[in-house]
Amino acid sequence: MFNLVLFFLVAAVVFSEFRFDWGEQLLGRYLASTNALRPETGVIWTTGNQTQRAHTHLDTIVTERQDQARVAREATSFSQLAQVVLPGQWTGLDRERFKALYLELPEDAAATLIDPIELVWLFGTPGLTRIFCQGKTQGLEIYFLGSNNRVIRQLDLNHQFLANLEKEENFFSERLENIPGFAGRIFPADVFFTALLSLPAEVLPDLITTPKALLRERGTIVRAGIWNEAKSGYIRLGFEFKENGETRIILVRAREWAVWRLSMALTRGEQ
Image 1 (spheres, rainbow, N blue to C red):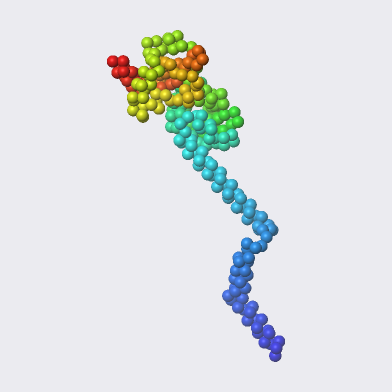
Image 2: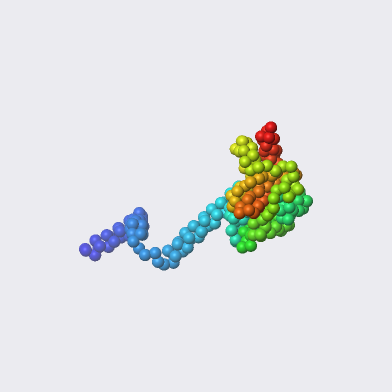
């Protein structure tokens, strides 16, 4: 009699398990509640951790690419671009952004990088599909690509070229009156800066585009001059520093339209 009862009891348990899956549910709840207490060992745990690390690494790569693309769109100079795109990294460069950066270069530096006639041909040919730049230990490389990622033209911006771009000013151990380009347009420092500071604030950044060059200098500015010729929309300004009996001239670029405003202010000051 006992065996019969035991048989029916076991049969009921087995039948209910097949019918309601309560055993699997209880086991699943138990494993879920003790998941944090059990050691992370075994093939399943290893595979899961590797997958999680892969997703994290992929997210990091995607974020870096997005950041680089954003900086490339917002870069105001090739030097700034090279500071962000590190060796081994790369990012796309919009052709309009490249044009803007190229047109901001001094004429001689632009021609050294790539002849403007060749650049006109590159942008005018239907074969150009995209531009991307890659960071190198020696600087920055820019590739013009055609169909099937064929390299049409490659530009190498090494550290020396980039350093020259950052230092657009020139230096002379000389006096302003000894430089013919400043003839007739040399002013005492107080007269020059009084006129300069009388201009609207939005004009000033286009008058002294590289103020760090002047801030790095030691000594006192005694005179300033305006170059008699414009070149590629810019005019050079010369600042004569004096220290311990020695003179030194710093040349910086200013936009032509801003220099015209400055010249008007200087003329009014002389009247």
